[in-house]
Amino acid sequence: MQTPFSTSQNYIDEFNPVDYYQTYYAPGQGIFIDEWKEFVLQNLHETFGPGGVKGDVLIDFGAGPTIYNLLSACEVFKTIITSDFLEQNREQLEKWLRKDPNALDWTHVAKYVCGLEGDSNNWEKKEATLRRKVTKVLKCDALAEKPYGAEPMPQADCITSCLCLEVPSKDLEAFTNILKKLKELLKPGGHVVIQSVLNCTFYYVGTKWFSCLSLTKGELEKAFREAGYEIVKIKVIPRMDKSGMAIADQDSYYYVHARRPQK
View 1 (cartoon, rainbow, N blue to C red):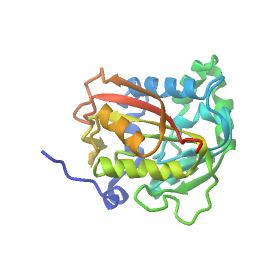
View 2: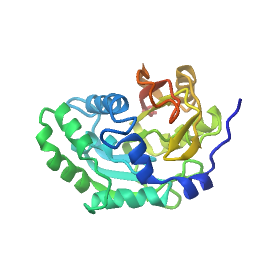
View 3: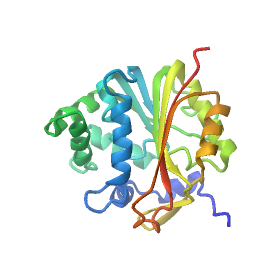
View 4: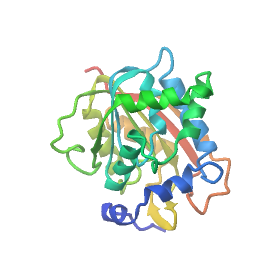
């Protein structure tokens, strides 16, 4: 049975970033705090580690209220631009950047990333580095012809996005079109690193229900190829912890590293 589609207005009216954090990332209770955290942060550690992807400009597209997928990248990029569609999410990002006492606490994630790098006690320096590298928090709209509107955007060496592109996409064509728009923001040869979920139809934020485009691995590969990318690596792992299936129903997680062709 086809599920209802959550519109942009649904998100504006109902998405609460604090509830999102509590549902998925809060220590001891978030359903993503173990399995997803380990998968996504290990992949980013490998992608942006020694000999990996680096450059001048990184754009994070559809960050939500989160900063975790920038913790490895901040060591190897000079400038980071983060962005989200929702004002309430951008407010949370700004709070974290200025060390507001009411900001969401990502210390546990920063310590984990630093542990991957060999010293979990280095987390305060890591957070300071990220705060220094993020130069802008912008509004982005995946459904707009130009996702950043009239904002002058530098061509990026890399674009990252986590748990975002399936949300505004009604179907595979819409998902593919978003990938095409992201490609135009990249330098020739630039990288895109997307991580998210497969075969997911819904997720909850607190008590609020939101739809998600259900994709298979084959559809994912098709979308990237039709969008004109060269796929460097695709990794899929099954969801092992089924305790939160009533909160979000994905059956697996994916990582895609692709490139815009040089020509």
